[in-house]
Image (tube, rainbow, N blue to C red):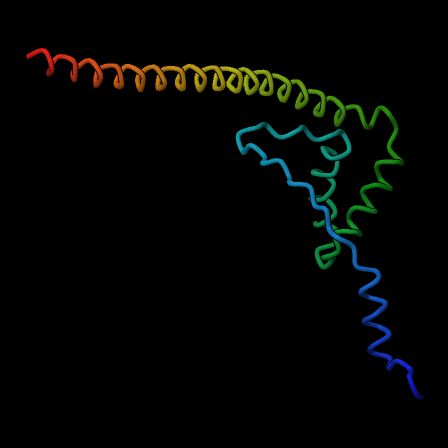
Length: 142
């Protein structure tokens, strides 16, 4: 095997060709005070269904099995049977919208307060500089 590459060399060559530069975008920092989005009607149903499923199948540890069973059950429900879950979801959505309005209002007030504070601190710094300049002049006159 003159001049041939070994298996490890050919693998390394193939890997180096396939390497891409990762261009990760910086994630926005999530505000922990921001209200969470409300659960949909299906997830409201799943909260209740998980409890029932665990009672019937205490040995099942598979999240996928619970999700699959819940999805199948949700599909088989009629619109009348889904109505209470839809009503709960709508109630949560109204509450979320109210909380978001309050949150956005606080955010807007917070930015205004920050701007005013920075303007105050700038004027205080300028006033202190003027006082220092003025005190030097007073010393010269005496």
